[in-house]
Length: 176
Image (tube, rainbow, N blue to C red; front, side):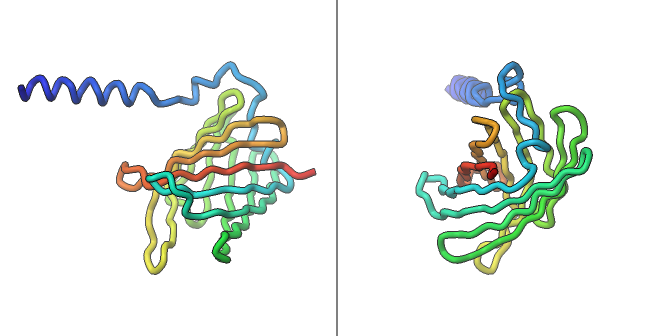
């Protein structure tokens, strides 16, 4: 009975891990997502944070300004939350090769690593997030999809110790 249960668990884990999308799934899609093009100029985003039960626990707006010189960029973000709180993050971005990016910010642990294929971008990074009197280190698996040249949909799975704690959903609009 133990061997049968163990075999069942192995098959289930393999099946579940095989269901995840990879950046290569978007290789032949278009339009092509280039950070240095989309995140250049003024942008505004509207988003929510949902806890692991799916309940929206926070809503927010983000005003962004992106600037690029060659293969290096800065994305200046100002967050405005529904409870009146504000936050600032300044990303320092670098294009490493076609479709490969690196990013740092003061509250990012180490580096964010990003890759694009077709209309998709996948960022992976860890963020220090203040909550009340504590600071949590959370992992983000961030997916952005270029819907039009001026609109990106962003979904991020947020985990701690590999356990999902919530999701962030953003609609990002490039301003004229």
